[in-house]
Length: 496
Image 1: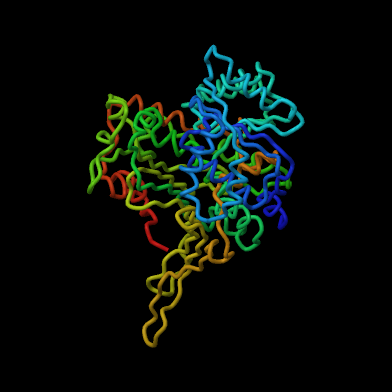
Image 2: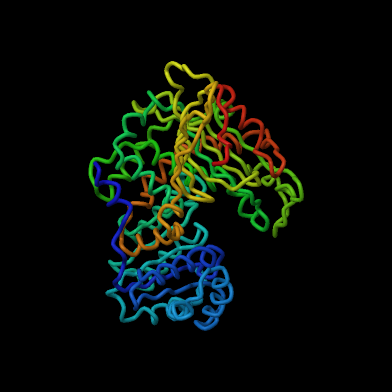
């Protein structure tokens, strides 16, 4: 078991040439995440010299226009002055104008011309676009003769709005691409701490004996954001925190915490075990939703507007009043390892601080001989500073009365390894180019997550009650704290 984790979280750098076609190539995701990640991959020598990056959008840009846009908008956010490397990267960039669903086939003709003669390369279609475009894009790419046996397609989240729409998208894309060619991306799985969770669990023998309900009291998974939704309310009205964050990011983290050790070191074994976790989640249905799930919406706080007053391109509607910007859930994994251990999930906008973390709360010592002893905690911090912290009880120095205090044994990746912590997209993009699907979601995995989430969504959307208000800048609605308080627990809020 000791050699499992390293081989599943590392891959051989991609060095043979490929064409990466990014649909939505001038959008926010591309300019803020994908282009910088690809630049860093290029700077680190992980892209072959002949690899090309082809952006597709409706912008009507020439290659020179697109390179100028990247140079003015992306480069200032990059730290470094490697002008030669930056100019080399810009030369990789191309742009093709395309409007999916349009009768104008000029864009596909231009892309066909650009790709002609390179059919022997790996060809990656990255769909950084709304899910409604996934099926039409794949169909039109196939009709244009651009889908080869060496092609892959990357689907950004959210994959649908519910199980039915997710199945429809999977069916549409699956008509063109085999499952082995489809990479459903969740960038949280590319974070260093998430990958190190596998190493921590499966490359360190001391943890496995206590990684179960005999020793663990509960697990908390938090993704907290300080930002609101300015300019994005039109999207968020139809997504909400449950669809936007819980169905994908938080459930993926839950799976990695709760999964069994994979039996083999191959690319499907980890995904097999994650699916088993999702299938073991206790359904939350009917009246249980009110007991085990809490939703909230932020109101005006100090210096910031409430959700309904955020700047937006669309007016508020009845949906705006009902959508949740905060969600907390008490989940249970019904199997031998985790029976009786609650998993508390929470995510929200306009919270006091930006923090993503997994907290493993151990049980009290069987017999306390020191007053003031607190249970041990293992905290895996995903952001803002990635690291692992084990909180142990220690005696404060001094003569006289014994005074205990929790003290962290901390591993900061940046400080320990003295290197830049790569962005999650860097790792995932290289895995796509290498054809390694380990950190991507399989169809049955996505659909199992929707199958568990759907009853909660249906209950909330069919309820006459509104989300519980909480002022921007506070720790969320009171109901979320009551969710834990009913069993004598509290959310982990300490700074490390």
